[in-house]
Length: 150
Image (cartoon, rainbow, N blue to C red; front, side, top):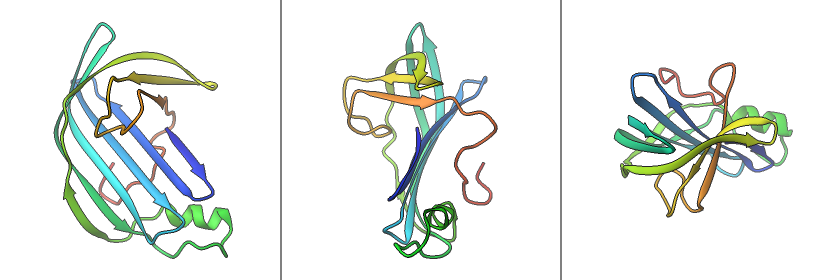
């Protein structure tokens, strides 16, 4: 899901490859802080019927500075542009790697196709809640990532 709000944005994305590997990224940037969060993991996945099992192999949580300062005095477009920048990685922490089996379906989220993941409890990837919608992305990566990460 990707959303731009007055206070910043968050974006989570899965990339599933035909060789059975996946990548998950989660980016959070706020107008009210000088840093942004980048969380990622990679691993393998299997599908059996409507069950999707995610098995992470590696991942970490990172904190980055942004180029420029967001503020209430900037236009929304300026703040959004600053929030999409990556300057210096200032902190790296271990990410809890959690194997989890979801019930999945493909459906609609508004007018877009979406991967719908249902779960029975909180997960490290999605947090609280019981259902997540991941919209199909066309035309490349919806989030600008640090140089060297694609």
